[in-house]
Length: 110
Picture 1 (cartoon, rainbow, N blue to C red):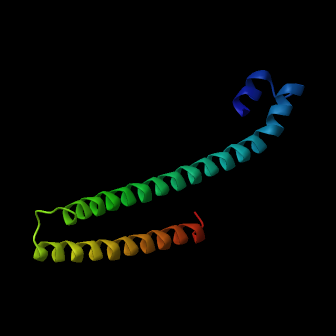
Picture 2: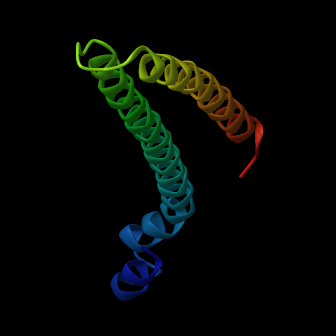
């Protein structure tokens, strides 16, 4: 804007208006870009969480499908039940770590 004001002429009304408005426009533009960056980061974090949850749900469905099979031994069913419990535990750990990461980002001043 300052370059435009210099081309127009700093002694003209339009040139002076551009010179006075330039800092305000720069601040508003910077604030808008900051908000856009924050929203993009939030969206990216949410997509990561959704992807991880979808992977856990697929694993859970696979284990459940194997457990429901008639062609599987009781020993294997016990192993699968243990895997399902481990999956539940890992899901809780993932959720807790995501909450901690999001909380740290919220309190951090960039």
